[in-house]
Amino acid sequence: MVVKDLIDILKAKVILPGDLDAEIKTACGSDMMSDVLAYVKDQSVLLTGLVNPQVVRTAEMMDMLCIIFVRGKEPNEDIINLARTRDITLMSTPYRMFTACGLLYSNGLRGGCEV
Image (tube, rainbow, N blue to C red; front, side, top):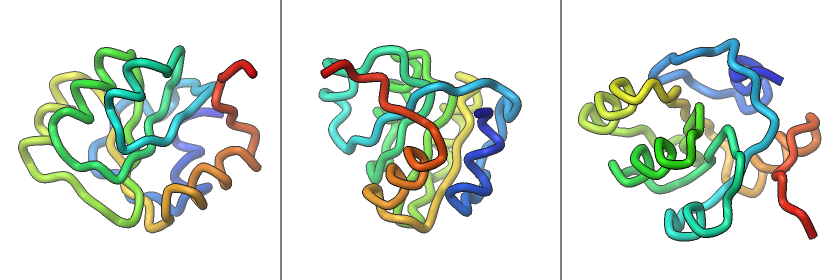
């Protein structure tokens, strides 16, 4: 799967295009950036309802390619500019987090967690 596939799957609005042809293998959904930092490994996409600069900074630290804001949330210009400087794609989906994660999972995207 590539980043642009997320647009159709999640009926997403692209807020800031980055490398839409970048390959993605895993994703995670969380509103707690401390959990993302503590438990996430090798994720490419972050789904969150949190809209603040820490989301972009966390994604950058974890080498994520794309942030998808759930429930139709959209970032302000400061957050968009921060993501631009870090080459992170930003999208917004009308779906709630549970549904968005389920749609990605049913389309073959996994979380990358070992149990």
